[in-house]
Amino acid sequence: MSAADELVRLTRERVAHLEHVRRSLEKSWTGIWKLSAFALLAIPTAFIWSCVWATVVVALDMTLMGVAAYLIGVRKSNIEGELRDAKRELKAFEAEAEAVAQAAGASPAATEPVPT
Image 1 (tube, helix red, strand yellow):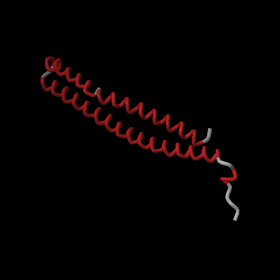
Image 2 (image 1 turned 45 degrees about the vertical axis):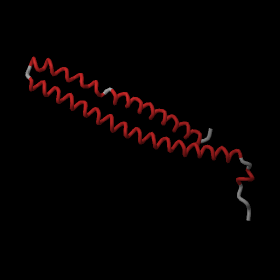
Image 3 (image 1 turned 60 degrees about the vertical axis):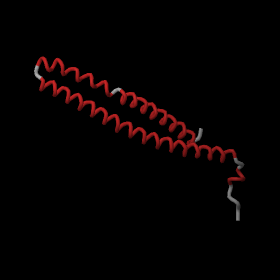
Image 4 (image 1 turned 135 degrees about the horizontal axis):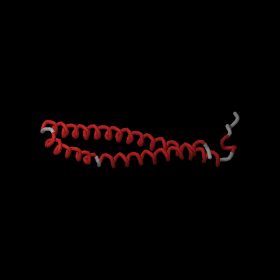
């Protein structure tokens, strides 16, 4: 196996890993709304302490959801950029591997320089 083939194999593995991470982030992104369940803690908080603390619980829950959305969104953006770059590299490495394979299949006379 040539170095170009090894680069193609490693880059394909990297692309597969990045696609897996992207799917995982999509799943996390769609599950952000589940964090709103913590706002239900405002009900017993209002009865035990006061409505002011219940408002604080709701505000903290909204903050938690906002921070989670921001972090997941930024990570998704980074992964998508890395995935684009990895796919571009994969195309270049595949072209290089194909060129190496064609050169290896060519006759030695065809690759030697012509004496002048």
